[in-house]
Length: 95
Image (cartoon, rainbow, N blue to C red; front, side, top):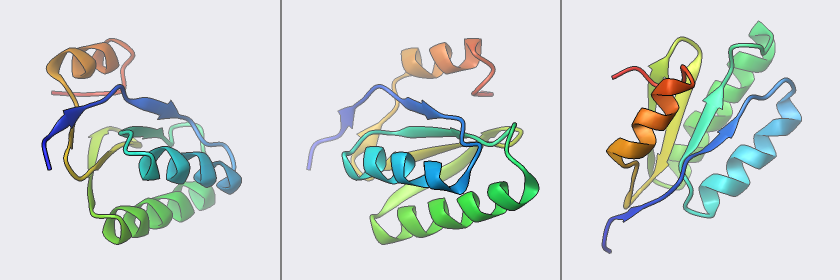
């Protein structure tokens, strides 16, 4: 399967029900930034568990890219250097 590049979808969940948006985008082969900066400790914990299960079940990668910010990348999808720069400008990615 060739590697494809995709625009990153950013989600800043305030509630666990926002997990569905993360899951739907990821299942659609779109990388997702999950910004948990404004989430409560409980919601943060639950969403990290959800994301871990999602990337395990659908084969992907999850990396912490800033404090309380995670990048979920589906298998065979790459986030371009340009896209990473765009995220960096928003404070959502540290190189």
